[in-house]
Image 1 (cartoon, rainbow, N blue to C red):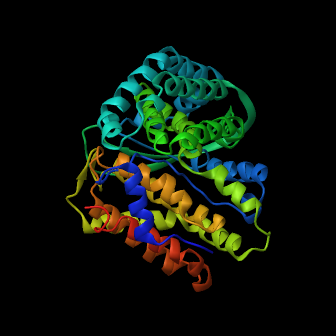
Image 2 (image 1 turned 120 degrees about the vertical axis):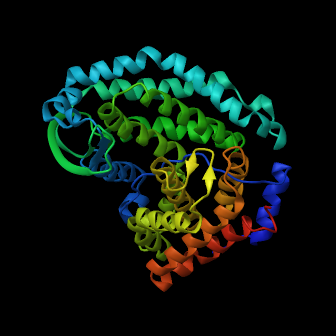
Length: 397
C-alpha cells in the first residue's frame, strides 16, 4: 500500500490550482452506501445491489414533515403516486425543465465565475450549453421513468404533522399505500451508466469541472422540487437523489478498483466492513460539529438547520467513499487529483471555512477508528492522515 506524503500531496494540488484556498462544499448527496463484497467485486451486481439499498431508504421509509393534516390522508397520497398523478407531476416539471436548466446554469455561473480566474481554469473547457444539455437529458429521462408502470409495491411514509397554527407539538403517523411506479432501485440501473459517463467525461479533462456540473444538477433539482407539493417533493426527491449519488460518488472507479482485487483481499473486506457504518459515522461526525460550532453559519444557514445537516451528512459520506477508493487503489490519487481540488474550488464561495473542515476530518478519523477493528482501521489510517494533512493550517489558512 502506498500513500503520497500528505504535505507534498496537498501542496502539489495547491500548485496545480495556482492559489491559496478557503472553504465550503457543494451539497453532495451520497445516500445509503451499504454494499456486499460481491457488490464491489462485480460492477454489474454492484449497481443492482446498491440500488436495492437505495430503494430501502428512499422508497420503503420515506419521511414527510407538514403542518397540513390533509396531506396525511391516504387517499390523497395514493392519488399522487397513481399513474395519473405521476404523469401530472412529470408534466409540470417537463414544462419548465428547459427554463430551469438555463436558470440553474445562471446560478452556477454566478457562484463560480470568480473561481475560474482564481484557480486558473481554462474557460474554454467550460461549455455551459453542453453541461446544461447533459443535465436536461438526464432529468428528462428520469421524469419519463417516473411515469412508467412497474410491479405493484407498498411504500411506507412516516408523516410528522404539526398544528397549522405553528405549534411546536408534532405527532407521527405511518401511512402505507400501494403504487406501481418504478422504484429508485430500477432507476439506478436505467440512468446510472449515463450519469457515470457524464462524470467520467468531465473529470478526465479537469477534475474541477465536475464542480460546475454538480452545481448545475444541484440547482436544477432544487428549483424543480420547489414547483411541487410536499408529497410530490418527497417522491420525486427520491429519484433525484439517485442522480446525485451517481454524479457525486466515484462509484464506477470503486467498482473497477475492486474488480482488480482478489475476492478474499483484506482491503476489500475492510471496505466491506466499513460500508454499512457509513451513514452512522456521518451522522455522528455532524452531530459533533453542531455541538462544537453551535453558531456557525455557512452559505445556506446554521449547521443545525435540517437542510444544512442533511447536506453535511452527505458530504461526510462522500469523503468516506473517496477513502474507500484510496484503499482499493492503494494510493491517494483520487483525493489528490479530484476531491481536494474540488473542495478548494467550491468551499470558499459556499462560505465553509477550513477550521470546520479540519474538525470534520478529525471527527471522521476518530469515529472510523472507534468502529472498525484495528486490522481494518490500519488499512485506512495512512489515507485518513493524508487527508488530514492536506487540509491542515500549513496548507490552507
